[in-house]
Image 1 (tube, chains in turn green, blue):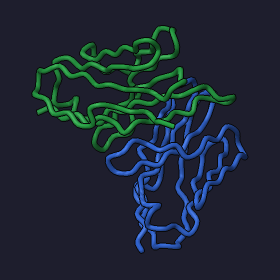
Image 2: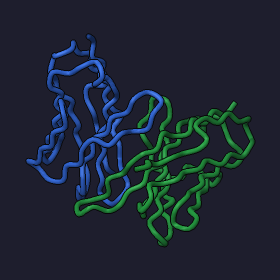
Image 3: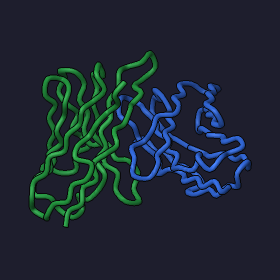
Length: 115
Length: 108
């Protein structure tokens, strides 16, 4: 079946511009996550959506970052007034709860470059 | 705070030369330990989930084991296509806390 898809695959933007990154999770997966992977850094949790519950935004690095999930499916991560330190690969993952935990399946990522 | 440390950072192997990767962790209330493979320019690919100490899982040339403090990923008789970065992550609630990864290069 189809995996997690993300668009665009690459995005180059000028400092100060806003960007939107999109994630389409695996059909039927109720949980959706955004992570960030910076050069030389590990994956960093950003935000988590589960069903209709309020999202966990505890990993968002600043108030320039926001995300929404419409209809329990597609999610958009928005970065306002981008800065050079926002340059990274933004990864989306989705999961369905298994008996032991949440096995997360990742998309290919969006590589964001802020010039 | 959950902590995950992977070693070594990089591993260069000859084809057929078996080795092990280490993942040490501290977490309050482990729900699962995950291994992923990541190829350059791609998202992490799920390999295994381990839930309790003593558990083992295998997939082709890979075998993952778990103790109360660490996990090992054993690569038996690796091939060049096993070259990748291997990521370990722990889950206490729902989010994953990742280690920095071990980059494995297998030479023919």
